[in-house]
Length: 448
Ligand code: IMP
Image 1 (cartoon, rainbow, N blue to C red):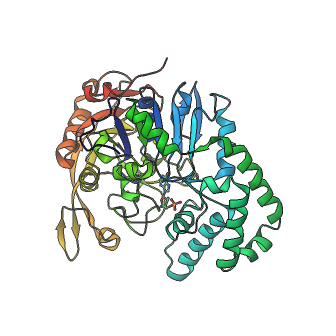
Image 2 (cartoon, rainbow, N blue to C red; image 1 turned 180 degrees about the horizontal axis):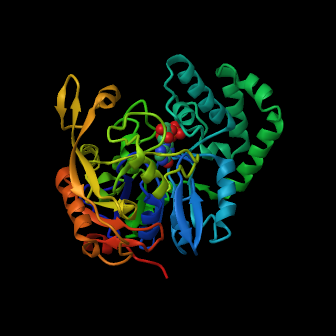
Image 3 (cartoon, protein in one colour; image 1 turned 60 degrees about the vertical axis):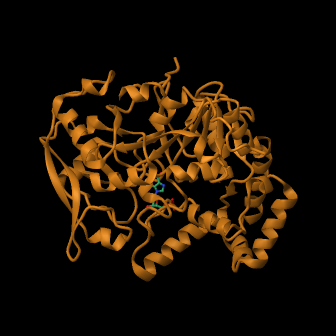
């Protein structure tokens, strides 16, 4: 039994969370911080995520495997709170194998994680079509089967990875779904026609993954107790959190820092650092309220210059000004020790920049607190403060103080208006195009 007075692990547990609506550029920073970690664990989401990295000069997009896989000797984990598309995972393992070893020694898949099957993917598309037809307001999901897989998990009828790789348990799950879920068998027959080969392929994938499936949470706890450094990698972002985001325009998992401990079965008291990643402006993919969205030339310019197109679906991202109301909320929910602001280079060349400091609602008046109700948020207009922009190339290395004065003023305003501490800034897509505050330096070890 664990004694309550047990000392905290020496190595520490760091959680990295998206502070906005996802796509904040977490991949690059997680990849970098991973260099100093022993274990890198994804804690939620599935292949709806897309982490873009540049490895040996080549662009690599990872949807499921943590980016720590590119650092030799790191253990990479998909925790219990993750949902796994097994076929896609095998394909991704093959892609990574061109750059790094992927073995049961460095990739641990939680037996507790739930499996996304072709049926869940089909249901995602169908539910979106029903939403669109009935109310004209689809969520704009990635159609990767995420919502239906988490729904089945919560209904306690999902398929866990540990059962998926066991042929008897897998068949029994298929049989039970066929007998309890209306249309499951018919769906297999009509839509998969190929249902036989689909499920046969599934069996092959299960065989391939079986050696990687383990009690990953127990292993991670053992690593933490042994003084190893653990990095917990979030996907999507705070405002897409199932409970705390802009429901129903959210993803189906717990994206916030607290979700990390729940997923990996780690005591929250052992967490030693929580860092948020945000953009120096804001983007959102899919439907849902977005008060600072720019539907004009400035928004188009941000999209083009920032190459704001989804890493998973290729959809154009909606772009807008930095929102200090939303960032204050993200700070409150996550308790960030520090926030890294990405994509400063995209703002270079703009004469002026705006930050939303509050909202104005037609009936409720001025609102300073991020509303719980998506309809209220949708009716809010931002109250802006305007700042002078900067021109020219930004430094790619060094500290934040290397930025031009206007950029430093912009950061200072963000800190004051959002109640956050900015500890790093991204000034380009490359792995080392990053300006670090001193707090962050201790976390970051760059591999040669
Ligand atoms: P789902 O996660 O596919 O169910 O999609 C739900 C919402 O989350 C949609 O608005 C998606 O666009 C959004 N979403 C899901 N994954 C990501 C991501 O990795 N980045 C940004 N948005 C995402």
